Image (cartoon, rainbow, N blue to C red; front, side, top):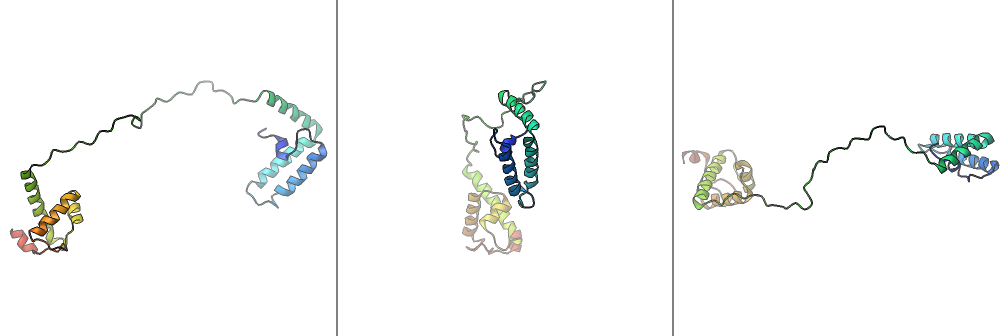
Length: 181
């Protein structure tokens, strides 16, 4: 049995037949599917009927008690597998708890000449954008030229210093003069 029949009927194992009957009637009134609207009402009533059927019959009850006593003395174990379950090889998915953190490698610093050359190239590319975008922002420069934020802000400031854009990001030169320059 999956669960103890005495526990289902909520009576002691040495209860008299009258006590078992009154407990069954009390629980049947409580858990009958017509009265109890819970989802497990049918299953609970089925278990109550089965428990009462066995415990109300003296020969069935004696057989159940002897089986219950044997299982209490030597509880059943689940059957063992004929072959042991193979163990999976361990794979490391995470870094060790004590692994040392190393900072990412940094590129060498640019020389002044390299920075000026890169900046002039970025200025030319930004001016080429004037015929596509009427206004420009540092975020837009960052996105369109694929540069990092500090360099985009610096480029925006350089464009303002050279008079190519005003403080609102509007181009002060037209696209035709940019192509000749």
